[in-house]
Length: 474
Image (tube, rainbow, N blue to C red):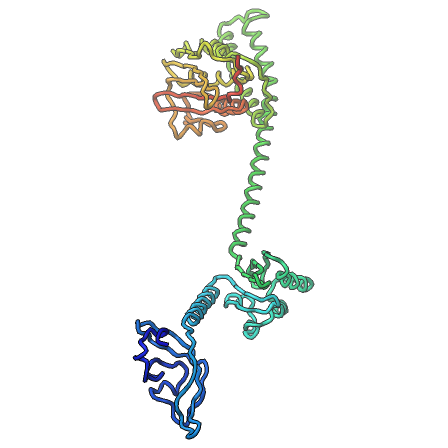
């Protein structure tokens, strides 16, 4: 006893229990004196707290029997045993605290929570679950039948379910305990949507979480509606684009046929094949009409080509070609025009530049468009065509001019269909704005791209890239 209490034995001798500690639940013993002579009753498993010699407290369970003298019947004391229950008491306290924490956590959950055993008896649920089901309070007491709870809720019209489907819905709700895990969604009569997550626990019971997903369903409906509107808009835009392309292609064909005839007859008249016109002014008018017809035909051809490119109807005629030859051909076509505006044409293409696999007509069309723009927007400057092989990109072709340049914020506009950076009513430079969009479409058709680098008053550099697989190795 002295070892257990960490108290020397002499200090214990002559002391009674009331002087060593405090009883818990033994009201008569805590009066500070012995029980009255007429209350000498046995006691069992009475909690008794003792402060040890080192200042710590320990709990014991005491059991005792009153002892009486055999001859006189006089009460001579108690005989009994003590069991140290400190560790057990602390464990029970921790378990109680853990249970309180669990109950508080379940109660403060924003979702409905219900725990039931393998017989579908409710072990624990929170007030959110009660609010969702709205049951009679007696039905959610521990041990209540979950099946009867769901059936009662269904009969009271809690669930948004047709009468002829109600039995099937209830059966489906109650079948969750047969599955390891399951998620279901359904709607209540008050328009709320519920997602129920059911999982089996180790005791073959079921843990269910009821989550209000009404807002999520609302956002989902809004997203579906927005998607439908966007899809309709895309379809309308695609239809309008197809209609536009078809219209441009048809009109281009309709205009190009008579224009070719006009230009042909004007060429005969201009060259006076059938005889002189008789007046020099007529010759001048004829030349003006002829050049205007050629210009108009070029615009129509651009429109037709762009329509084909937009519709994906241009087929490339790929063949080996020398880039220097293509550029030289473009320079010959622009030489006279460049000379009139005081623009110098130059090339910087390495002599060992490899052949490439491309459509010669379309590649020439791209480079000619870019060089023509350079000539058009440059006065007394230069146009230089450069080319190199970039290991990270492939073929890089640059058409660099020293013209008026384009503001960075206007570069995107230059690539739009019929886009004109200079949009004043009295424009200084003529054109339809199809050259750059068409050139980019043709470059992309080759698997490459076309971009612009420009600075106002310094000049513009058009950069066309083609994939490395178009390089023909020796």
